[in-house]
Picture (cartoon, rainbow, N blue to C red):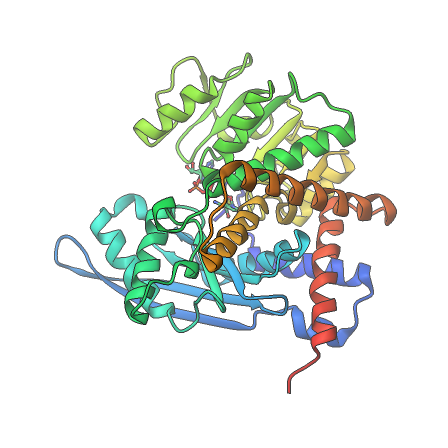
Length: 420
Ligand code: NAD
């Protein structure tokens, strides 16, 4: 699970600790805490798959609905060897506060299958996806719980889930997943939405701190969907992306990496490996590069108490979920690093997922400019909302975002009341 940590850190413990900090800062009633702190529903499924060799291999899958007070559960599906129940619970919990921070009418959910998709053929992936989708079918649906892509899941995988769900229902149900291909009711702009949201919140942070984007040095850990799009947009705004990494290699060029070429190289070869005009460095060196903007965009626990002292940046933009541990938060705070917390920074993805769901439900589709403009409005407004709490209450940005998210869910719970 950890990108660089030496001892395992449980992401769910981190999620619970951050909830407690926010609830304490808000002076939240114990009764409300009892209602909203823990997942509402947890499903663990066995996913047997016939591999290309004819052998049947069993995978473990999960779907967690953390909270549905403000709307249907919403959250991605992750395919990764380190997926486990606690990780999915943590990610579902963060989705609840994230949807509330950007004020969209969804609750939090998450799913995953413990597998290594890099070692699976397309046929194996399709059979696993369809079997997993069938197993979680009782939980999902456009009014109940709407999955989306996460690490190593793609629009094609969303299409297979949509098809499996629709075949079981007997009619097409586009709104059951988001992040679908455009030909199947996907939204223009969804694929880039997470990185674009990272970009908008980074621009707002630079403005707040008086940092010029032009010439600002950027480092990106994890050059996937979220990381590469954020890098591309910042590069287009004349920032200089001096470092980037994926699961195999970390690259550095003090004059700036050629981002459009790096994206093409990754698309062509599947990795950053072998890219010319860059120096290979270690993953640890990447995170300690002197820069203005550091974007962890891979997995949880990338920045821990061990490597946080070596971080030399002015801004950390958390494109990934949970990349900074609470101990590292304290160290970075003392160093004066400005943090754009995950539940704000990477909320562009779920925001455009919400737009996709709205378009599917209405059978009416928007053009890309419209989507991007609406996203910018949501992200800059949400950034301002969190910043206001940060400055008014004199709390760090993570606590400010958690206070905003938790307070909105708490208010919904209070007015709905406890059933029965
Ligand atoms: P992705 O599969 O497109 O990319 C992940 C990238 O991280 C890959 O390039 C992979 O090689 C790299 N990586 C994996 N382990 C690494 C390591 N130890 N060091 C460096 N790089 C490593 O996934 P994504 O969708 O971009 O998701 C990345 C993060 O963003 C995750 O934390 C995810 O939960 C979060 N996120 C994604 C979305 C979305 O819409 N895709 C939305 C919100 C949050």
